[in-house]
Length: 120
Ligand code: FES
Image (cartoon, rainbow, N blue to C red):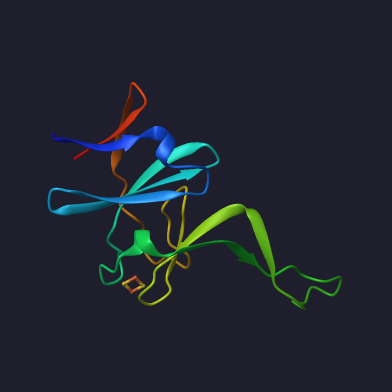
């Protein structure tokens, strides 16, 4: 296993990210709800740079009293990462793709003396 120094933990604010090269591999590190998460920068669809995609709250379709969808809304408690190539969406915290579209590959992190390391 190889350790790659990313930098100070304080560099990644809530809602922020940093994409780094770890040898031949790119890793995206995100801070979501205070937690640092790391994903390989390769979309399971066609290996697009998923970690450089936009982050949006999950879109939901609330039902009205007749059980019909009249509008769209955002679920602000769940953040999605949207692939910049073809728009596949992944839960930023779990890595799970929406609609059974695969999952992101998690990378291990180590925090030591305020520094972030990726372990590959
Ligand atoms: S490569 Fe990500 S959606 Fe196609």
